[in-house]
Image (cartoon, rainbow, N blue to C red; front, side):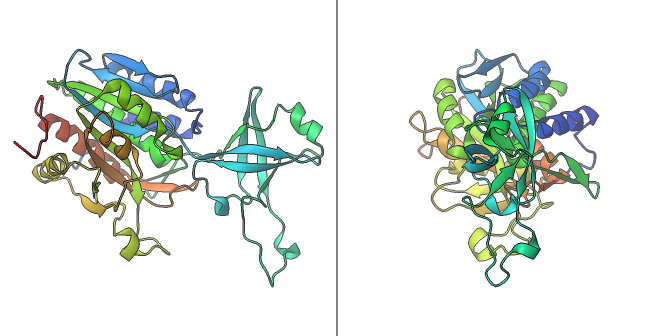
Length: 362
């Protein structure tokens, strides 16, 4: 286990800029440009597709192709209805949590730039304490400080504008990274750091490496579904987040037991190819990288599923980063886990032999 951080000042500066930038599902391109600019010195070329997935490629001429992947989009809201009195009602863009919305500040993204607003909520004094109303999609509303629909429209706000939270990156107690959208721009960060380490350590891979930052995971793995047909990989190692189940109100009997600070989480699931997973576990043991295990019943719910079942079957595995408070604006991960995921992917790549089939029938 490394005692010296593999992250440097440039890494952390990139991470902060990348997390703070808004990249809602369907509008990931500004974040992708930041990511590609950082990755550019460490890859040979880029692939981009119609919907905005970005792929940095090392050894693009190689026949055997390995993907390492994260997704770039964050949950958000859409403007759905504007009242005559100038209030906005919303629908989800991805799995946005209605319970955290009341009293949050928001950014409305328009062609004229950002319009600020707030999710209003009635004061405690005015609510019926005998029958408290919970936040729901149909009673959440955004106040822009306007009194008419015409005022709202004059700001450039219309039905279909996307809405994000402005909450920014911070570090708690020296080693906890906190921000919205760690799910899963931290994945994009980690695979970019793998590329950096390969470059700085002058490692030459015998195969093509496709560092893939997919779009639209939060609405059904759509970006991965598209790009895997373009790349046609032989192997895919996906990284996403999973739950720290040691925080209050989570049932470990249902969710399993995983915790921040205890290492990457290696998943068992039908979509996970067993021989590839065992190579990852062997790599972790050889490199003395701590890891945890998690079981998924039918699907992983991550881009692993999209890669695994594409192109006639792609050997795929999932290395997750344990996270507290998923789909809130205070998502939290441990720096040690971030570094260990980077190391585990890095060393696994060095362990994969060219043209390895991972077949059960050798």
